[in-house]
Structure formats: structure tokens, C-alpha cells
Length: 468
Ligand SMILES: *[C@@H]1O[C@H](CO)[C@@H](O)[C@H](O)[C@H]1NC(C)=O
Ligand SMILES: *[C@@H]1O[C@H](CO)[C@@H](O)[C@H](O)[C@H]1NC(C)=O
Ligand SMILES: *[C@@H]1O[C@H](CO)[C@@H](O)[C@H](O)[C@H]1NC(C)=O
Ligand SMILES: *[C@@H]1O[C@H](CO)[C@@H](O)[C@H](O)[C@H]1NC(C)=O
Ligand SMILES: *[C@@H]1O[C@H](CO)[C@@H](O)[C@H](O)[C@H]1NC(C)=O
Ligand SMILES: *[C@@H]1O[C@H](CO)[C@@H](O)[C@H](O)[C@H]1NC(C)=O
Ligand SMILES: [Fe+2]
Image (cartoon, rainbow, N blue to C red; front, side, top):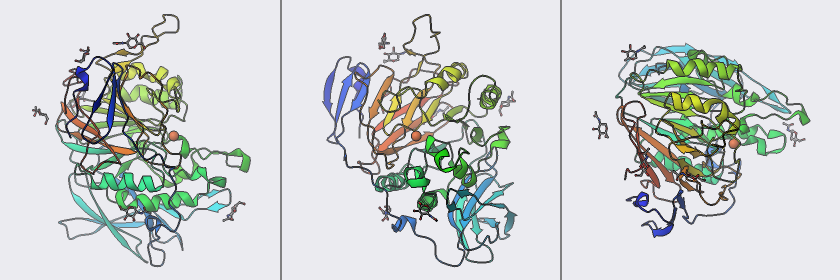
């Protein structure tokens, strides 16, 4: 589908596009008026096909992988057994290899109110070859299951690589459509940048943690085969002193391990990885970030380490967006923006992905760093050194869409729409990356919002006149 030349139109007008939807144009950008299904999002019941427990005694379930080191030569494999602890060993072998290697992980469990978790296994496979397909087998000694993954190419400046981006997925029928669209997209994501809010178990009385288990069974069909890079959202907090749960992030931290020590972070809630030509920094909107806090000190030391000759693309993931023109969660990201935005502009971050708001929005390259409380410069200005901010909390969770936007659309907002979907970012080389958002209501191959990102370090040209 050709994207209309909205950038040529300076005045408010309405333009028909060929998918039957409408684009409302103003000098503040595009508010899509695509007509979508406004039905409430409903969680899939426990007996749904997507939550099926694998058969066999002590069969491993909820299998998921993520990057296990700083450069992509290690993978963390995680799974749950329920009948007995069983073995934490993973057997793995390259597609063309005959010899099986093995690694042994660790088991953890936790209690949450009156819920007791299964045996949660985490095992890191080290010293993998780049760009290689590996098979791996879990459940040794009882029911075994075999999966595979492909390691990323070695880190380098012109390495092509495609990320999927998903946020706020939950476990509704809409969540299932989002995941299916990601899987069926002809643009093949090789790993997922996940911007927080996973299971929404906390929507249930006493945060019914069986919904953490069902969510992990639901997404296994993707995350057992390609790494998802985890970011913590507010629904990972699971903090509720009213029934004695005082330790934030307890279920999330037991279930999802990340390679935070590899980037000298002291907490799993903020860390970085390199993957192909990208340097990815994950931040925590729900941990302290004020001056002198561990997250602040870590990021201050982290940003100067990014070598754009090695990893040209600097991407930041966080849950709560800094720029959001939806009325939902309006300005919730403001305090973190105040702390970190000057660094993002100084170090020329290419793109920031956030979730939290259950709608889609893409900003222009803007910054608000000139404002100092007394000078009155409190309006964001266009700034070619600044990131594009993308809100993609539209995975399809139980809370439904956030449909009420601030009007008129502010000029920092380039495109916004309240629909479920996912995005892809195809890095081509050190200068160009093709980005697109795919709404669930369209066919698998349709791009609903597309832009070519020009790298801020290697090719810092104005992107706003690019037609895709
Ligand atoms: C936990 O407590 C809730 C509320 O009292 C109850 O409905 C549920 O059956 C209990 N679950 C277990 C495993 O005891
Ligand atoms: C979820 O989506 C998959 C793939 O499209 C489909 O096979 C399955 O039946 C769906 N399940 C539910 C509960 O919607
Ligand atoms: C940055 O990366 C390039 C390419 O790998 C390398 O040649 C250069 O030495 C690195 N610079 C620093 C400061 O490490
Ligand atoms: C953006 O809008 C603000 C008002 O909200 C205005 O002050 C500013 O001049 C506009 N910037 C541009 C470049 O149009
Ligand atoms: C980078 O990729 C873009 C898009 O595919 C292409 O137009 C450009 O020529 C490439 N640059 C180099 C140096 O190969
Ligand atoms: C970028 O291009 C747009 C549209 O052509 C224009 O309005 C804007 O002023 C340009 N910005 C810069 C910084 O050149
Ligand atoms: Fe959220």
C-alpha cells in the first residue's frame, strides 16, 4: 500500500486511503481515523488451545530464550517443570554438527500469596558460534522437548538484522492475533524487542499467578525459537502489601532472566546488549533514576561506551513513554525524560521504543532539553540530534485500547492511531533502517505506518520528507 504524501499538505484536510480508512491531517501530523473493532479485549480462557500443557510426565513447559551475554554468543534458556524439579541440563548442537554439548542451569521457585510456582529452570549456553542454527533439548531424564534458534551475526556496522517490536501483549484473543500477525509477517523478525507488561496476571484477584504460567505457554511458540529482549513494565511490579506481597517484580524476576551483569549493571531491570549492528539499552521506568541512583550512574557510564563504528544503531527500550499525546498515562514518563533526555540528544539515540499506552504513536525528532523551569521554553522543538519516540503498547491486553487523544494533535506527534498491532525494524546497513507498524485489522503484508530511519551518527539527514 502506498503511503499518501501527507507531508506535502500544510493545512487540515481529509484524505481517503486505499484500505478504506481515513487519515485526518493537520499541521501537527496524522491522526488515523481507521475504523476498528471497539469490542472489549477478553482474556482467552484457561482451557484455550494456546495454553495447552505439553503432554508427558514432567514435560518442560513455558520454554523461552533471550540473549545471554553482551554480544550474542550466549543464550539463556528457561522453562518450567511441575511434577518434580527434574534436570536443569540443556543438550544443544549446531545444525550441521554431530556432537551434542551440554550445559546445566539452576532451579528457582517462589511463592506469591497462596500460589506456589513450578520449578523454574534457567540455563545459559555459552560460546556459541555466530550466525548458526542450533537445536536444543530440555527435560532430560523424563519427557524431552526439542526447539531451535539461530544466533545473530557477529557484531558489526553494516550487518543487516530485523527486529520485531511488541508491547503490552497480555493474553486476550487480540494478543493472539498480534502474535499471529508477527509470525505471519513477510518481514521476518529475528528477535523481539519487548517493551514491557507481559501477562497482566495482576488483573486477577491476588494477582493469580497461574496467569503468568498461561502467558508463558502462550508465547512459547515464538520465544522458544527466537530471543525476546525483556523490559519491565508496571504490570511486572506485582506489588500489593494488602495481602503481604511487598517485594516488587517478584514473579517477573524469578521467571525472566537477562544478561545484566554482562553490561556491568547491578540489577536485571536495566542493562544493554549488542546484537548485529544495534546497541540496545533497556531502562526501568519503575526503578529509581534520580541523580546518584544505581540506574542513573549505570546509564551515565554506559552511553559513552557505545561505539557507533561498531554498532551504529542506538536503540533504547523503556515502558513508560516520554512523548505521548494520548490522554492515557499522559506525562507519566516526564520525570525520567527530565533526567535522561539531554543524554539521549547528546549521544544521538536513533529511536526509543516504549509501551504502556495501549495505542500506537510515532513522534518527529524532537527535544525538550532547553526548558529550565524559568525560561518558558516548555514546548518541544524539532531537533535532528534527537530520537524518534515510538509508543507501541498496542499488543492487545485485557485493558483494551486507549482511544482518547489530546486535541489538537501536537506537532511533536507524526502519526497516531488507537489500534492493536506490532512493528518491525529492518536494519539494512549503517545508514538506513526500514521501520513499519502493522495493525492487526489489515492483512499480514500491510504496513500501516512506515518510515525510513536515517542513522543519527552516520547519516543524520532529515527523514520527514521520505516517502515509503
Ligand atoms: C487462593 O486464594 C483464593 C482467594 O481466597 C482462592 O480463590 C484460591 O482457590 C486459592 N488458591 C489456592 C491454590 O489455594
Ligand atoms: C490463536 O492463534 C492461533 C494461530 O492463529 C490459532 O491456531 C489458535 O486457535 C488461536 N487461539 C485462540 C484461543 O484464539
Ligand atoms: C570502535 O569500533 C571500531 C570498529 O570495531 C574499532 O576499530 C575502534 O577501535 C573502536 N573504538 C574504540 C574507542 O574502542
Ligand atoms: C509546535 O507547536 C507549538 C505550540 O504547541 C508552537 O509554539 C511551535 O511553534 C510549533 N512548532 C513548529 C515548528 O511548528
Ligand atoms: C544502505 O541501504 C540503503 C537501503 O537499502 C541503500 O539505499 C544504500 O545504498 C545502502 N548504503 C550502502 C553504503 O550500501
Ligand atoms: C525537515 O523536513 C520537513 C518537511 O520537508 C521540514 O518542514 C522541516 O523544517 C525539516 N527540518 C529540518 C531540521 O530541516
Ligand atoms: Fe503499562
